[in-house]
Image (cartoon, rainbow, N blue to C red):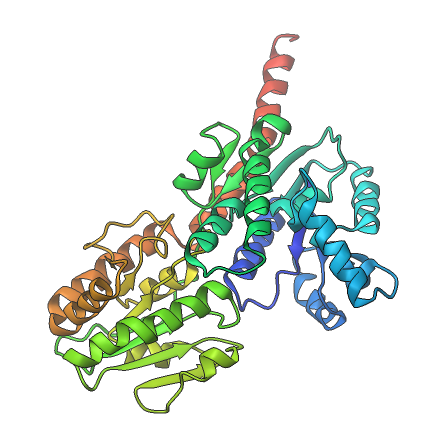
Length: 418
């Protein structure tokens, strides 16, 4: 097969959940055929990552930073940028998200590539789909692993009032209309990361579930049989709004309740690029902010559990799967665990208010046998369902499905003429 892979951002390095998903999808596509990749890059330094992707791609085409979004405007002044942004915000039908990724030269590039004749075009999210020509006879699959309107709705409900909020409610309405009509307005197929998103997009044969996954570690954490110090860990990119909010919420409202019952409780906030408000939580004693770490296992080894007090966002949390793969119990909010086929009280503990989250953390600390059972059941679930190896087979089956059908039709057709 000849496959065109159009992705929003270059899928390397593997330092975020988005990059991990894109990279493993690329691996699966490369196992099914010859891949040509098109990707946006946000700075010229990212071109160096292309060398890591040559193993999977026959060609890699990068849309330069000056060729997309507001950067494509010739020497824009600050007032011009504000005016352009406001124009995007007030557009009656087009979400400003698509304006951020607008690229006439990128569209010309993709149109020229499509003219070669590919067996399959795989596009990622709305910005990748936005680059495609309006009419394609080729089979197209769009990976909508993050339904943008649902993610934005969580944010709008949870976030504080700000002057831009009415504009973002307008953006939500446009995204909701666009995403809920994808099946009616396009002939494309779609992939989502959960059964919940499948129901939202439309429970159709054209919508397939391709969950997020994890590379199983060679050495998972030991499961202790005796009580340990009450150390809890938050994991994630600490320049991402949902993670910033979750860490601040836990430190301000949950952690004091833990310290009241366990005065020696500690919180480890582990993840790259912590913003100043997160760095300010570090006191070197009860709360430690690490920044980027080469490996996470030494920090998970210290912790009783991973906490995922996420209050908005979309998709599924690879950080939760990662902790489960390391045999580390998880305490999450409902939104944090959304989209995962898990059972509360069996694979993890779920609570949404500070008292409930603190109680769940304390239960795992005070009941080592219960904590160990949660860790084992979650590890079994992840190793069966959420490995990239298993998910890769689903992607290959999906990609080759029409090829198998066409081959079978050809055999039947030939048999009728012999």
